[in-house]
Image (cartoon, rainbow, N blue to C red; front, top):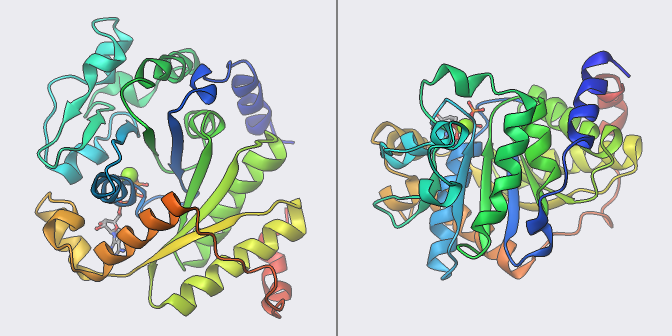
Length: 292
Ligand SMILES: Nc1ncnc2c1ncn2[C@@H]1O[C@H](COP(=O)(O)OP(=O)(O)OP(=O)(O)O)[C@@H](O)[C@H]1O
Ligand SMILES: [Mg+2]
């Protein structure tokens, strides 16, 4: 085990699990190995879809200092987590209601101190999430790119972790690296569900999932679940440029339809079963990249 993984394990094991694990608030953390795969768009649009199902999600932007969520929502919140850290307010006072009726907590924008938070402060934010349990049924935590102690902590305290992966080989290998870190190094018990984003087709999304499924099963004996896919859709880029979430920008777009289907899958617990499908030859091709 390398030094970094050891350090991360120490930090995480020193954190108490958030008490809200026992509450009615479901915590879903959205993460990825590689950055720029669509986590923040997924989090925001899933939130809009869950609203349509009469759920009341709150988003926590845990990509501290980079303001992903508020940029997609086109908002400039007055307060952010830096105020919590400076003990200037409580977490529930930071909740901003966006124009789409989506509640979110800003991780701060361009604030240097937020980009380099020490473990103790990340832990303090994690522990304070219990304050939200009477205010929401679903807490969606959008994390930053890469595998670091903040991402791991927010995955460890979630009931479910959604890993976003695109068909790019580096996204698949980095997604696997994150799953391996969580399941093998940190023995995370929570379920890992996978969302395939920017796929050319349903078939491509299924192939990507199967690669990840068999590698995970084969090398770390852990089973991941498929929660759905979002096609590559140019309209997402236009929506992002306009700072309007695609689900509000064009509800009938391919991406919006897919986000809505995923929200249904999540609420109805529809999990596609690939286990029975025949193992394909790709495993030998990929063994080299995935091993270790
Ligand atoms: N389904 C999609 N089709 C086309 N483009 C997409 C899709 N999903 C996301 N994108 C584009 O990919 C880019 C990255 O998306 P996003 O910011 O959501 O990723 P991220 O994983 O949160 O990134 P980071 O790791 O930097 O936080 C954006 O420019 C967005 O417009
Ligand atoms: Mg992001």
